[in-house]
Image 1 (cartoon, one colour):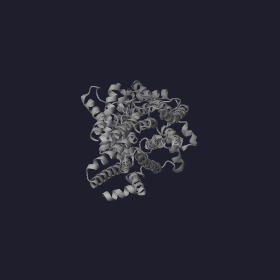
Image 2 (cartoon, one colour):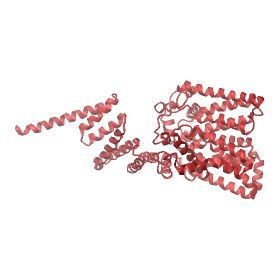
Image 3 (cartoon, helix red, strand yellow):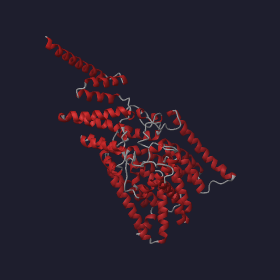
Length: 568
């Protein structure tokens, strides 16, 4: 085995073929999948891609469509979607294929970057292969909405590679500056490139307190600051602000850390990094959603379990440095680089839109891959090389198989939803997602049961009450024998939704229709009138109110006649 591995390392074409297979083969089965979850509002429901817009319009709008705007500015990702649509239309396999091609290019860049960081050819190859096949990347690589992560990662890694090479070829710093702009235009996490460059210069000894060194580096960083100003200017011109608005997300559901005091949030966020490291080492259980109750903040900053967990996470680099003193500098560099890359999404500096998401680890995981590879080859110095190759091969095959199986989950929304309730059974959103998919299959009883699980986990999840009401209405309309029961259940959920607070006229419309079908016309009239007060342009509701008023008048008239009749 060792002989074959040595031959592989001497043949660069063979190494690139191996990287190609590692990056592509585990994901091939997912290419014919459907648009899922965020793909739908991001692409299918956004009229931008289906109307007459030029590519320059991609730099003038929010990442999400107007009705869901969140102050996110990712024009390069938007442009890639626009170009994808112009070439193939809204065809999911083509979008997924582009994602996979971007991932493949990123893997090649990771390999080159690892070589430039002088981890050794064998460790660089191992790093790139593990990065290529690791299942924690499936959420970034497979669905269309993960493209921002892959694009951003590609330009962050490429930018750092150019910065490293600029030590001997200063003109390459121009490409680093360009990569910084493109990374930030792909996703906000591209901001990590600049501190990564500084960190590398410290690690490589390029930042020295000498006049010549300071003048040399200031030219580079002056260029990078100019690139940052370009990013800030274009964002301000398009969005009217420098920072994202952080709107349209429910902190109770999506990120309960946003509701915590900073000490609790910091301690909880560090503990979540322990969870991320566990997923990296043992990615058996993966989920598309970790919202409410699946991952919860610590109760207090004095939680002993939380403090111990945080200390263990922080201590890992020091422990590794102690046992592998010759790798001390690399371990410290990789650990700090990981921290730099995860900071924008880790809730450590400021709350973000989610408590945890696997796609957010596409960029930071490169440093874990490098550290793991260096440690494996350092250990191998004291063991038979054949054993190392077999061990490495076993790890890669195991990760590849897990990625292949996970990619099947992303085929369609029903599969990923079923997987979600198995892997995140405490998440209210996974149960709500499953309910929506079951309802699309006309399995309304099962959908109602799934809604019940979501509400049990989080009784304030308004959307689920509305969904369950709709499913009960569907059953009532299709089964006359069960109509009264189903409509009364729908009434309860709609009233609960209104109790929780809403200005949505549709909710009042549905409650009015349910009450009218239950023979409670006066109540129905009340809720339809509320709906018209919220939106007076509803022609159908105006007609329904008029018809219902005639029925009420006729009923009242008949009632009066019946009272007078005995006297005649």
